[in-house]
Image (cartoon, rainbow, N blue to C red; front, side, top):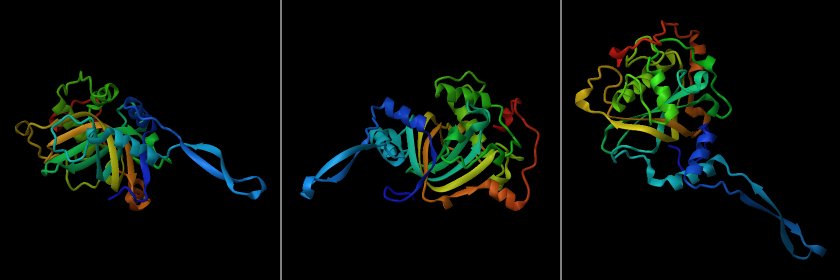
Length: 286
């Protein structure tokens, strides 16, 4: 677990989203004051001078955001939807998502956690490859092979409107949330929904990181009507699904990240290119 005093680094950091949240919630990035000591005349005593201004670090900005958002950022998931923000600690899976506003630079992050009473909670967070400091991932690291949901345009509309518009065939929050989870778990797969399939053997997948702090802005948050859904695939157990955008992900160390491109190179093979299903309805797969 990454704790307040632990050393760490930001695997994901959206400066634009951090600034927007700060502006919307009255957070200012007041510069810290830096002081230096200067020798006084004749070497007697000392005086303070040369005041300089230093910008806030990412960690300091994150702490300010968390303080002002407070309990609006859910972590126990014991209160009913909707949540505006969410945070937690755990494993984050990272893949490409080429159907959203970011196009070839899009990313989808999946977090699976649980509520205090043991119910499964899935977060599907859509962001940008450009928001990974140091650009550790390239589109070429994750070949565009395998199954691709035709709900990409509905997801793009949801992201662009920040959850306020849905004109797609997935025309209610539950069905669109279920399809978003399907994307997070199965895009790039040869056999969508197979539990034993290793993520790195799928197309479009990039990495996973354990022991992460994460903070997200939420656009939609639904508790599924259990009598409506009978999942026979790796969505079994889904109970609450939140869709939004990652604001930051902080890891305990570089060793926290497993890059699938390295696993593919070590195996000496890439995922086989499969028939793209972009444009087909595939509603039966949902």
